[in-house]
Image 1 (tube, rainbow, N blue to C red):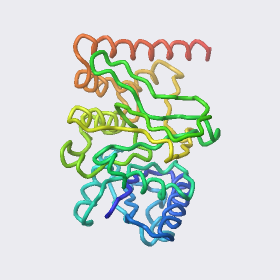
Image 2: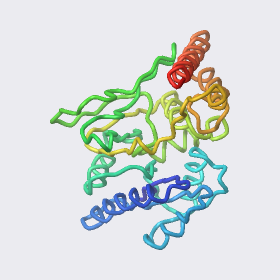
Image 3: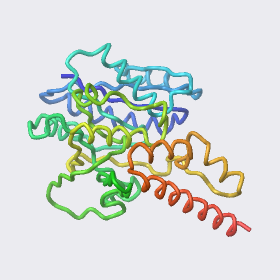
Length: 296
């Protein structure tokens, strides 16, 4: 059974080098035993100009590389990876969403293999528990809660120190895209990501919420752990009003107003959708004013 690992990258070769080294070390460790699944890395290089694709091909001959023109963004890159996999692999068990700024222990795929082989989790979306790279036991993500009626949501156990000794399986309504296993049956019924409406942010959450509406189950499992370098995550520095206004239209911004309108009207009941949209952007504007005031 094949499990393609879908890895979008763009112009951060140093980060990608570290991430691929960790990823392939774990795959090699898994393959050294009696492996059930074939984990293949599909690197979607969306127009990098720093030599990422050439370096990856030279250092990992078994890697598959798809090239974009710089306009795929995250959701489009994932979709390209899914389409490529369906054409080139038989018997696909599911897809594993990955980031190049993740690091893992070498037994990651042994544990993942055991979990996805469990009939209890048949056709279940399974998310890894995500930790901060610089604070090993501090949780960044252990699943997300979302209220479809009023739009309230939060990341479960965010910023808590993990002191649990036993395995925990957390039911959730959404996941991100870091170490997330999506069964092929879910893709078949839900479809691919909506890269037109949500090319960068919200693409992963939108897909998860669509899957929930189709009757699929989502969990976050504590036995599969990834460590994320949060320093590599794009952040808008609100240093002026021009930067603030730019954040409302920029593709990479988490405050793209057009995208937020689509998300809230799609997944939250009226009039709560309007309220949540206004609340998010009022807080963003307040933060911008505070940053500008502190600067001067």
